[in-house]
Image (cartoon, rainbow, N blue to C red; front, top):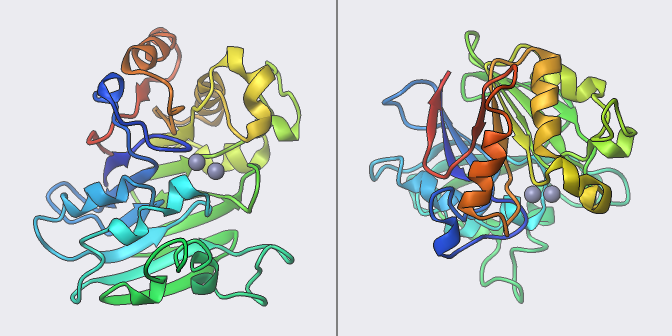
Amino acid sequence: MLITFCGVRGSTPAPGAAYLRYGGNTSCVAVAHARGEAPVLALDAGTGLANLSGLLDGAAFNGTILLSHLHWDHSLGLPFFRAGDRDDARVTLLLPEQEAGQGGSGEVSAEGLLGRVMSPPFFPIRPGELRGSWEFAAISPGPHKAEGFTVEAREIPHKGGRTLGYRISDGRAVLAYVTDHCPTSYGPGPHGLGAYHEAAVELARDADLLIHDAQLTAEEVPAEAAWGHAAAEYAAGLAARAGARRVALFHHKPSRTDDELDAIGQRFAAGPVPVLVAAEGQSVEL
Ligand SMILES: [Zn+2]
Ligand SMILES: [Zn+2]
């Protein structure tokens, strides 16, 4: 499995000279079955989704976009995905099935739900006007298959809309994708950074790579955790507890400069699990 970080920011893009090394685009991770093969899975569709087009050597995207949830930083890249918006593209887009009262499947279709932000007067076109063959559907917690991968979805506490974490396997390597995670909403846990609850631990269990929300630092948790995110220290702690081989700190706070991210990475230099600070354009082979 080859994963490529196409966008690593949380909340809103971070353009500017202080953010060039780690990159300013919002959440998107491309997954290919092997190095040299075209990515067939996109995890989230933040502004980083535009970078996925550059990985396809001019070809159309033929695959699945799996959204963790519908917040802007995970969905607003959709209309700017050139490799998906062309006549020969084939795209399945899966988004978390909504709970009753939040635009659930009985109320609004997956396409209708996306269309709430992607339609006039907010945007010139609707999801159904993207070129190529697009299918929009909801995904629920449980086991699934997509593009030759097995995908286990579990509900993750966040804020403002249902959020899923994913465990993706090709039968050899395992990638856990747990972004936008507010573990303090399940209690303080052993270090005040949030609970190491069952869904998080099971998603990350023995994973070759855990990509995890690291919007905060431990010092910021008391004041800011209520906004729905986790600390880098929690991500490293979860990886250690679940037996993950590596952890990638992801969904960086938009104001976090390159130098500050370097310093956060240094905190874990002597830790039990190797920690990488995800950077836009970086690939990891599993
Ligand atoms: Zn986010
Ligand atoms: Zn979010």
